[in-house]
Amino acid sequence: MSTTDTGRVTMDIDGHICTITVDNTAKKNAYTPAMLDQVAEFMTTYEENGDLWVCIFCSAGEHTTAGLDMPRFFGPTAEPSRRRPGLVDPFGLERRCTKPVIAVVQGITYTVGIEMALAQDIVIAADTARFQQLESRRGIAPLGGAHFRYLSRTGWGNAMHLLFTCEEFSAERALQLGFVQEVHPFGRHKERARELAATICECAPIGLRATKKAAMAYIEGGEQAAVACIPAIKEQVFATEDFKEGIQSFVERRQARFSGR
View 1 (cartoon, rainbow, N blue to C red):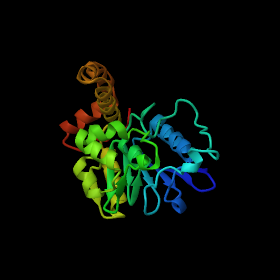
View 2: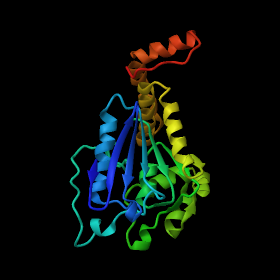
View 3: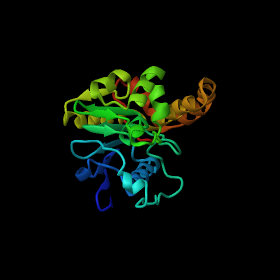
View 4: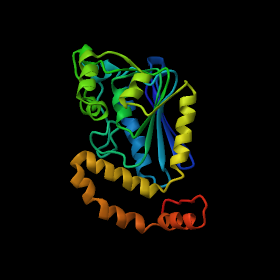
């Protein structure tokens, strides 16, 4: 656990599932530099622990986040980041996590809250969620990936409409745009994330990691890069105990029991 004078980040482990929780409810979960650094630390712990197969990334209380605690990032009282080099970047702009991450959002989900959610793989929203990319109303611009992830999710016109107007939009609108994959009543949305994580854990983790790496290759290099990585995927997954177990479970008409080896 890391604690600042206004917030903390925790990581809980339950079997193969870890949950990273941001808790600064007194300030609507506004992020300080130290809190972002700790999210990066925990995401790296998840990435590098072979016994952890799925991560849920969420916030305590009624809201995801109001954004950055601005004075701590800009101006005379700005605080330096002390992030160690090489950690997983919560915004997915540098080192990316190669294992499944489910983002959970509710209530106010502004600026960096949207950007970090879109950097993950699946987003589960409460029906209370309200989204807004409002940096330009503060005299700055999105710096955490909104400028291209809005495009990849929803196309040029919808992206520019939201980025230029800085207007708030609802959970249902976010679902229509492809920003979130499911919307549930508040409270139920976190239960659903846990259910989904458990479902993902029924699959072979090495296969899922290979799948995500291949998808990332497409994002970074297009179709030819994605095609080129297929032989490496075959070599990796066909050599695993999980591959043998998957075939054997099919033959025996039972659910597979994967071990991550």
